[in-house]
Image (cartoon, rainbow, N blue to C red; front, side):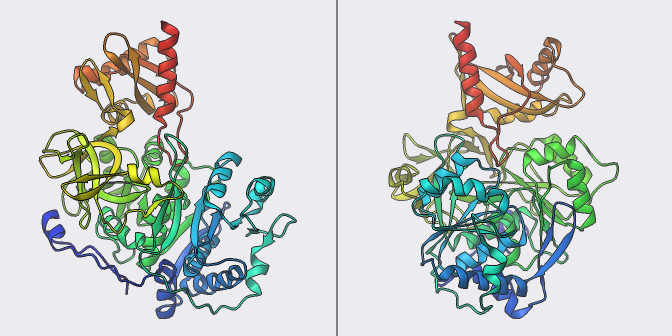
Length: 551
C-alpha cells in the first residue's frame, strides 16, 4: 500500500546498487499521507494524541481526511495556491490536520516552534509573507501584538477556543463540507518552508517541494532498520515544527500507514519518556542526542525494548551507543542531514555494525562525498574536506526564500556537476562511511593542528561528571587557538579546579595529546538551539571575550 523506497540486500553496496528512485511527476504530500490511506483503510489509526495529562485519543486516517478537507474548504475562501500558511502548534492531531490541508490546497506550509519568542516569529512571518496562521490560545496574544508589523497576515485561527484575537478552529471547520478536491500539484511544486535553526546569522527559509517527503524515505527506512515492519509505532520528542520531527517522523510514518504518537510533555524528563514508550508500546523513536544524554542519566532498572532507535544532530560516542543497546535492546542508528538537504547519511545495524564516532554510509539514492572547495575536486579517503551532496536530489531544497545570493553560495561546480555544500567538515573512511568533523566555523586551528570539536565532546561525555559539553577554540598568541571545554555538570558533582584537571586528563589519556582541553570552564546552562544543538558561536564569543580580558 505504501511506497517502500529501500529494499534490503546482503550489504550496503548491494542495497545501493539495486536502489531506484520512484518519483512520479504528479504528487501531493497531503494526498499521499492521508487520503490514500483513508480511501483504502479508513479506520486505520493515524495519530495517537496524548495530552499534557496523559490522556490518549486515537484518530483514524478517515478522521484526518475529513477534518483536513473541512479546514481546506475553510481556508480556500481567503487563500490562493502558493500562499504561505503557518502552523504554530505543538505535537497534536490538529497539527497533522493543518499540514495535510495546506499541502492539499497547493499552499505552502510554514511550521513554527511554540517556544519561539516575538522576535523569532516576527522574522519568519514577515520574511515569508505568511497570510494565515493556525495556532492556539497560548500564542494568540503574541501574534495579535505582532500584527501591525506583519502586513501580509490576514487571519489568525486558534484550535482551542474562541477569543477576540482569533477565529475558532472547531467552529470554522464544522461549518464546512468533508469533501474537497485537492489541487493537482507536481512533485517539484513548493510545499513546505522550513527556517534554519540559525546557529549562525539570521534564519533562512529553505523552500521544499512536495517530492521532499519521497526524498526522505530511504534515509528514514534505513535509520529504522528497514522501516516499516509489522507492529511499528513511532514517536519523537522533537517538535514537529522542525524537519527532524516533521519529515523524519510524522510524514514518513503516515506515508507508510504507521501510527504516530503525538505527545506534549509539560517538561521532557527521562522518566516521562521511558513511561510513554512502555505504556503505549512504542517500537520506533527518533531521539535527539540531547534526549538520549538526559535519558542515560536516569537509566531505568529494567530494559525498555524497542525495534529501532534513530538519532541525529550531534555525533554519538561509543558509550552512548553501548548504553542504547543495553537499554533498548537495539543499536541506535545515527543519521545526518540539514534543513536544506536532510537524511542523506545513515548507519544501519541491520546492514552493518555501528562504527562509533562515524555518521554512517551515504543513504542509497544520494551521492554524498567530501570535496576540496579550493580546487573544486573530490577528496581522497582520509582527507578532510567539505561534506557535499550532488544535485539534483529529491530531498534537496528548491531555494532559500527571498535570498538568491545565499542560494547561489550554497552550491559549487565540480567537473561540470552541481554540488550542494552542507557547511560541515568531514572525511571518507576506509570502510566507505562518512565521518563528521565539525562545521566550517567550528574547526579549531591549534599549533598547526586542525581539530574538530565533536570527538572531544564525545570523549568528555564518557566522564561521569559531565552532562553536556561544548568545545571551541580560544584565541592564543602562541598556538593560534587552544581547546576550551565548557561543561554543564551532572547532578551530584560540584565545580572545582581539581575536577577541571581530572576532566582534561580524561581526554588527554584517550585522544591525541594536542586535542585535550587546556581550559575547562563550568557553566550552569549550555547555550542550545531549540532543536537541541549546542550553539558553539555563543561559546566562541565567550572564549574570545575571556582571551581579550587576559591581554
